[in-house]
Figure (cartoon, helix red, strand yellow):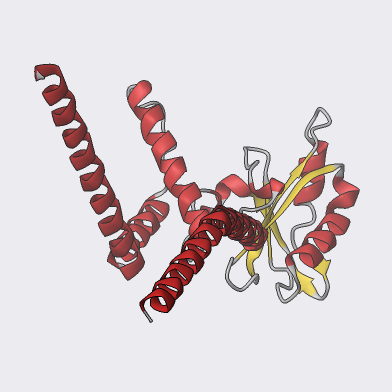
Length: 251
């Protein structure tokens, strides 16, 4: 009896050692498989994020190459039918103003979330010398486009040239505006206040009201809280790093 028990014990011990050896052999393979799965998931998430960012840029009002380019020669156009898509409006305006000269830019301002035109556009024409192209474009003021009478004037005479009032925008827009304010502050500091355009009292009042509404919005308050929290975290990390360096030197 004792010998049979001993045989069974040795057999079970042998089988358990074989199982452990098999587990040890398969463990590196399982680990490699898990690492591969993690890497594949990470790449999928990265690709998805890139696609989402690209889609957001397509929907963004300022996600096109024509978004930048306003200058003293820019033409302002409004009064057109804004029920069509951005591309349809751009094509219609380009065709309507093609007789004035070579168009270098047609920017139709839209609301990012809806894609609906805000009812105005900026147009730039290639300069030919005497400015005949601008005069030709301004003669189209009051002209008919799709049964609508157009308003055509120099952009610098319009409030929309200086700011986008009552505009919600998206996260890309807000980041762009924030970056622009940062660059303006830097330029102002480096040039000793620089030379600023003097706005009309009406535009100044619009800016003031818009700023007041923006600061009162929940989105602005949330972003300010997040920004303050991030600054505080960075400050604490910097202080901690400084203390660690100091301890290392003392040691």
